[in-house]
Image 1: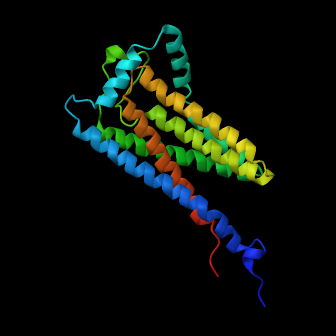
Image 2: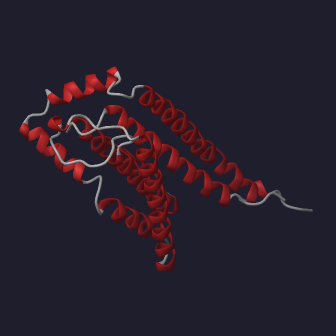
Image 3: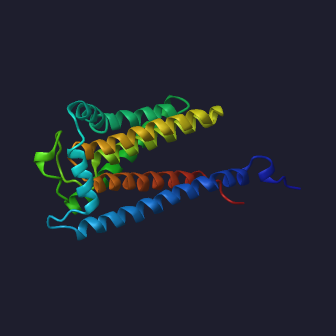
Length: 236
Protein backbone atom coordinates (compact mmCIF):
# COMPACT_ATOMS: atom_id res chain seq x y z
CA UNK A 1 0.00 0.00 0.00
CA UNK A 2 1.55 3.34 -1.06
CA UNK A 3 1.59 6.37 1.19
CA UNK A 4 -0.06 9.57 -0.02
CA UNK A 5 2.75 11.91 -1.10
CA UNK A 6 0.79 15.03 -0.17
CA UNK A 7 0.44 13.81 3.39
CA UNK A 8 4.14 13.16 3.78
CA UNK A 9 5.52 16.34 2.27
CA UNK A 10 6.42 14.58 -0.97
CA UNK A 11 6.13 15.59 -4.61
CA UNK A 12 2.43 16.44 -4.45
CA UNK A 13 3.04 18.88 -1.62
CA UNK A 14 5.88 20.51 -3.54
CA UNK A 15 3.66 20.89 -6.61
CA UNK A 16 0.83 22.38 -4.55
CA UNK A 17 3.18 24.87 -2.88
CA UNK A 18 4.80 25.91 -6.14
CA UNK A 19 1.50 26.34 -8.00
CA UNK A 20 0.53 29.81 -6.69
CA UNK A 21 4.08 31.08 -7.12
CA UNK A 22 4.20 29.85 -10.69
CA UNK A 23 0.87 31.53 -11.41
CA UNK A 24 2.16 34.75 -9.86
CA UNK A 25 5.27 34.59 -12.05
CA UNK A 26 3.20 34.00 -15.17
CA UNK A 27 0.93 36.87 -14.12
CA UNK A 28 3.96 39.17 -13.95
CA UNK A 29 4.98 37.99 -17.43
CA UNK A 30 1.51 38.74 -18.81
CA UNK A 31 1.26 42.17 -17.18
CA UNK A 32 4.78 43.08 -18.25
CA UNK A 33 4.27 41.92 -21.83
CA UNK A 34 0.86 43.53 -22.37
CA UNK A 35 1.87 46.77 -20.65
CA UNK A 36 5.19 47.03 -22.49
CA UNK A 37 3.54 46.24 -25.82
CA UNK A 38 0.91 48.93 -25.19
CA UNK A 39 3.47 51.58 -24.28
CA UNK A 40 5.61 50.65 -27.25
CA UNK A 41 2.64 51.15 -29.57
CA UNK A 42 1.93 54.53 -27.97
CA UNK A 43 5.52 55.64 -28.48
CA UNK A 44 5.75 54.33 -32.04
CA UNK A 45 2.51 56.04 -33.08
CA UNK A 46 3.64 59.32 -31.52
CA UNK A 47 6.86 59.65 -33.57
CA UNK A 48 8.05 62.70 -35.51
CA UNK A 49 8.33 65.02 -32.51
CA UNK A 50 4.96 64.27 -30.98
CA UNK A 51 5.03 63.52 -27.24
CA UNK A 52 2.09 61.95 -25.35
CA UNK A 53 0.32 64.40 -22.98
CA UNK A 54 1.30 62.42 -19.88
CA UNK A 55 4.97 62.77 -20.84
CA UNK A 56 4.66 66.50 -21.49
CA UNK A 57 2.87 67.08 -18.19
CA UNK A 58 5.35 65.08 -16.09
CA UNK A 59 8.33 66.70 -17.81
CA UNK A 60 6.96 70.21 -17.30
CA UNK A 61 6.28 69.45 -13.63
CA UNK A 62 9.83 68.21 -13.09
CA UNK A 63 11.31 71.34 -14.63
CA UNK A 64 9.44 73.52 -12.14
CA UNK A 65 9.92 71.37 -9.02
CA UNK A 66 13.62 70.67 -8.70
CA UNK A 67 15.47 73.11 -6.41
CA UNK A 68 19.26 72.60 -6.19
CA UNK A 69 19.07 70.51 -3.01
CA UNK A 70 16.40 68.24 -4.50
CA UNK A 71 18.39 67.89 -7.70
CA UNK A 72 21.49 66.86 -5.75
CA UNK A 73 19.54 64.13 -3.97
CA UNK A 74 18.05 62.93 -7.27
CA UNK A 75 21.52 62.72 -8.79
CA UNK A 76 22.79 60.66 -5.85
CA UNK A 77 19.82 58.30 -6.11
CA UNK A 78 20.06 57.92 -9.87
CA UNK A 79 23.78 57.05 -9.63
CA UNK A 80 22.92 53.85 -7.73
CA UNK A 81 20.97 52.48 -10.70
CA UNK A 82 23.88 52.08 -13.08
CA UNK A 83 27.61 51.36 -13.31
CA UNK A 84 28.98 48.56 -11.14
CA UNK A 85 26.05 48.54 -8.73
CA UNK A 86 23.85 46.08 -10.70
CA UNK A 87 26.65 43.54 -10.94
CA UNK A 88 27.58 43.92 -7.27
CA UNK A 89 23.91 43.35 -6.46
CA UNK A 90 23.81 40.20 -8.62
CA UNK A 91 26.86 38.77 -6.87
CA UNK A 92 25.42 39.73 -3.48
CA UNK A 93 22.18 37.94 -4.37
CA UNK A 94 24.08 34.79 -5.26
CA UNK A 95 26.11 34.88 -2.05
CA UNK A 96 22.92 35.40 -0.07
CA UNK A 97 20.96 32.55 -1.65
CA UNK A 98 23.67 29.87 -1.64
CA UNK A 99 24.18 27.35 1.14
CA UNK A 100 27.92 26.79 0.66
CA UNK A 101 30.74 28.22 -1.45
CA UNK A 102 29.95 26.13 -4.54
CA UNK A 103 26.26 26.95 -4.23
CA UNK A 104 26.95 30.65 -3.82
CA UNK A 105 29.27 30.82 -6.81
CA UNK A 106 26.67 29.03 -8.92
CA UNK A 107 23.88 31.37 -7.84
CA UNK A 108 26.07 34.44 -8.36
CA UNK A 109 26.97 33.29 -11.88
CA UNK A 110 23.33 32.60 -12.68
CA UNK A 111 22.27 36.02 -11.38
CA UNK A 112 24.94 37.75 -13.46
CA UNK A 113 23.95 35.87 -16.62
CA UNK A 114 20.28 36.66 -15.96
CA UNK A 115 21.08 40.35 -15.55
CA UNK A 116 23.34 40.51 -18.62
CA UNK A 117 20.81 38.82 -20.91
CA UNK A 118 18.07 41.11 -19.64
CA UNK A 119 20.25 44.15 -20.26
CA UNK A 120 21.06 42.94 -23.74
CA UNK A 121 17.39 42.51 -24.62
CA UNK A 122 16.53 45.90 -23.15
CA UNK A 123 19.30 47.53 -25.16
CA UNK A 124 18.11 45.83 -28.35
CA UNK A 125 14.58 47.12 -27.76
CA UNK A 126 15.91 50.61 -27.05
CA UNK A 127 17.91 50.66 -30.30
CA UNK A 128 14.99 49.28 -32.29
CA UNK A 129 12.57 51.98 -31.10
CA UNK A 130 15.19 54.78 -31.09
CA UNK A 131 13.08 57.21 -29.10
CA UNK A 132 14.73 60.62 -28.56
CA UNK A 133 15.18 61.93 -25.04
CA UNK A 134 13.79 65.28 -23.86
CA UNK A 135 15.67 68.38 -25.01
CA UNK A 136 19.27 68.46 -23.76
CA UNK A 137 18.72 71.92 -22.31
CA UNK A 138 16.29 70.40 -19.79
CA UNK A 139 18.77 67.84 -18.45
CA UNK A 140 20.08 68.15 -14.89
CA UNK A 141 22.49 65.21 -15.24
CA UNK A 142 24.43 63.33 -17.89
CA UNK A 143 22.65 60.81 -20.13
CA UNK A 144 23.45 58.85 -23.27
CA UNK A 145 21.68 56.67 -25.79
CA UNK A 146 18.01 56.52 -26.65
CA UNK A 147 15.20 56.90 -24.14
CA UNK A 148 12.82 53.93 -24.29
CA UNK A 149 12.84 51.95 -22.08
CA UNK A 150 14.81 53.66 -19.31
CA UNK A 151 17.99 51.74 -18.52
CA UNK A 152 18.14 53.02 -14.94
CA UNK A 153 14.51 52.08 -14.25
CA UNK A 154 14.97 48.64 -15.78
CA UNK A 155 18.26 47.94 -14.04
CA UNK A 156 17.19 49.06 -10.57
CA UNK A 157 13.96 47.05 -10.79
CA UNK A 158 15.90 43.96 -11.88
CA UNK A 159 18.38 44.48 -9.05
CA UNK A 160 15.56 44.81 -6.53
CA UNK A 161 13.80 41.71 -7.85
CA UNK A 162 16.91 39.53 -7.83
CA UNK A 163 17.88 40.65 -4.31
CA UNK A 164 14.37 40.11 -2.93
CA UNK A 165 14.28 36.63 -4.46
CA UNK A 166 17.63 35.75 -2.86
CA UNK A 167 16.60 37.13 0.52
CA UNK A 168 13.28 35.31 0.30
CA UNK A 169 15.02 32.03 -0.51
CA UNK A 170 17.38 32.39 2.45
CA UNK A 171 14.63 33.54 4.82
CA UNK A 172 12.43 30.61 3.76
CA UNK A 173 15.09 28.19 4.95
CA UNK A 174 15.12 29.95 8.30
CA UNK A 175 11.36 30.37 8.57
CA UNK A 176 11.70 34.17 8.70
CA UNK A 177 9.05 35.76 6.48
CA UNK A 178 9.30 39.21 8.07
CA UNK A 179 12.75 39.78 6.62
CA UNK A 180 11.46 39.23 3.09
CA UNK A 181 8.62 41.74 3.54
CA UNK A 182 10.93 44.43 4.88
CA UNK A 183 13.47 43.83 2.11
CA UNK A 184 10.76 43.91 -0.58
CA UNK A 185 9.40 47.25 0.68
CA UNK A 186 12.82 48.89 1.02
CA UNK A 187 14.20 47.63 -2.29
CA UNK A 188 10.93 48.39 -4.08
CA UNK A 189 10.94 51.98 -2.80
CA UNK A 190 14.56 52.37 -3.88
CA UNK A 191 13.84 51.09 -7.40
CA UNK A 192 10.86 53.45 -7.71
CA UNK A 193 13.03 56.35 -6.52
CA UNK A 194 15.69 55.58 -9.12
CA UNK A 195 13.11 55.48 -11.90
CA UNK A 196 11.41 58.71 -10.82
CA UNK A 197 14.77 60.45 -10.50
CA UNK A 198 15.24 60.05 -14.26
CA UNK A 199 12.05 62.05 -14.89
CA UNK A 200 12.88 64.64 -12.24
CA UNK A 201 16.32 65.17 -13.77
CA UNK A 202 14.76 65.71 -17.18
CA UNK A 203 16.57 62.93 -19.05
CA UNK A 204 13.60 60.59 -19.55
CA UNK A 205 9.92 60.74 -20.30
CA UNK A 206 7.69 59.12 -17.70
CA UNK A 207 6.61 56.44 -20.20
CA UNK A 208 10.27 55.47 -20.56
CA UNK A 209 10.39 54.73 -16.85
CA UNK A 210 7.08 52.84 -16.90
CA UNK A 211 8.39 50.77 -19.80
CA UNK A 212 11.54 49.97 -17.82
CA UNK A 213 9.50 48.71 -14.87
CA UNK A 214 7.26 46.65 -17.15
CA UNK A 215 10.27 45.15 -18.94
CA UNK A 216 11.76 44.23 -15.56
CA UNK A 217 8.48 42.62 -14.47
CA UNK A 218 8.39 40.62 -17.70
CA UNK A 219 11.99 39.43 -17.38
CA UNK A 220 11.79 38.68 -13.66
CA UNK A 221 8.52 36.81 -14.21
CA UNK A 222 10.07 34.71 -16.97
CA UNK A 223 13.03 33.87 -14.76
CA UNK A 224 10.84 32.96 -11.81
CA UNK A 225 8.50 30.87 -13.99
CA UNK A 226 11.44 28.98 -15.47
CA UNK A 227 12.88 28.24 -12.03
CA UNK A 228 9.50 27.14 -10.67
CA UNK A 229 8.86 24.90 -13.67
CA UNK A 230 12.27 23.27 -13.44
CA UNK A 231 11.92 22.71 -9.70
CA UNK A 232 8.52 21.00 -9.90
CA UNK A 233 8.80 17.28 -9.15
CA UNK A 234 7.75 14.91 -11.91
CA UNK A 235 4.26 13.52 -11.68
CA UNK A 236 4.10 9.81 -10.96
